[in-house]
Image (cartoon, rainbow, N blue to C red; front, side):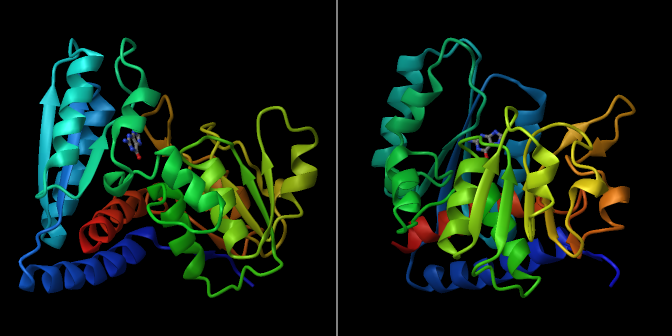
Length: 280
Ligand code: GUN
């Protein structure tokens, strides 16, 4: 059977349309979901992400407030701002864009965000809820990957899932979500031995390593669902995933492209989390 390309843009549009309907319902009750995004410094990639978050909010009728602070902002000043945002009733979600300048401790900032407003799903309370099987606010990229996997119609029960990458933002929560759907999950990383042997057993393969074309077609089980979280900028300026798309498309059953796969889902799930936080 030829490989089916999973259209992340189309999936994102469908989910956003549903979110907009829910936002409209809340508005009737006088509630406008509000997201605060804090950007410290001028990292070019972060500036683009933050602008896209603003646009996403506007698209579904949510309020967004972007607070841009200079690179020189102290940790204490940032923590005070987070406290203020935690206390505001018109703000349901608080997101501090990462990475932060070197002199600010990211972990302290994540801990300062109220778990109820932690729309990134990074707070240890929310991570703990996910791991113990009671997910509330879950990290956006893995949540988006699950939505893409859902579009294949495959029941994950008893399937073998392999996640390549063990970051707190993607790999670990991804593994927890797959486990929650009763898959048998293996997490691989830079020190894994015989990586290809493991990836070839995967009915569902998720790559989140940050290395262009790291997974070749011969590392993929025929017919597998392959989700590419990678966004690697090549010297040519082109964007490449962690999966060798040309090779993988000869083997996989389903495959996400880069761009146009996982990317459009991440901000969509941030909007979803903001809606959940507001609906509470
Ligand atoms: N920087 C890159 N991705 C993210 C994200 O999902 N959340 C935050 N807060 N910062 C990021």
